[in-house]
Length: 155
Image (cartoon, rainbow, N blue to C red; front, side, top):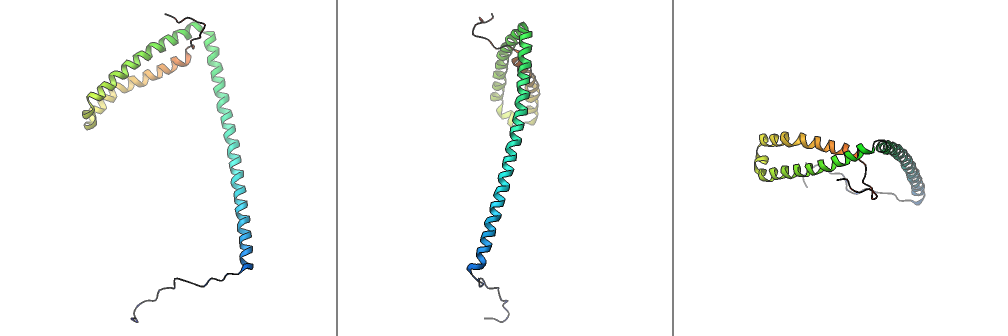
């Protein structure tokens, strides 16, 4: 071998194995793991408590909102029925609007993909109307009375 070649550290080293020193290390490692697992369990328990509180808060707010809507519907039954009819009519309008919009997309798919100008025109033409229509439908649906089996459908 050439004398200029640097020596590399040995890949293997001596390891002393004795039962007395390893036992203490193993016991302390198991104790550390047990302690760590208990901390994790305590954290998970606390997280579950916080989630239960959150669900309780959200559900109480939802129950209050439902009670207010029910009270409003009982106080304004005629208006609630009119909201239902308006929602049903606007739902048909929305279906027709979506049909027109999807036809436009299918007919002009290449132009919409290639040209940013045409895509912006499409969004400007259909976007606000669709967003507002969805918002109005949501409000009317929430305020509308649900049809009951005992009531004949209004014509």
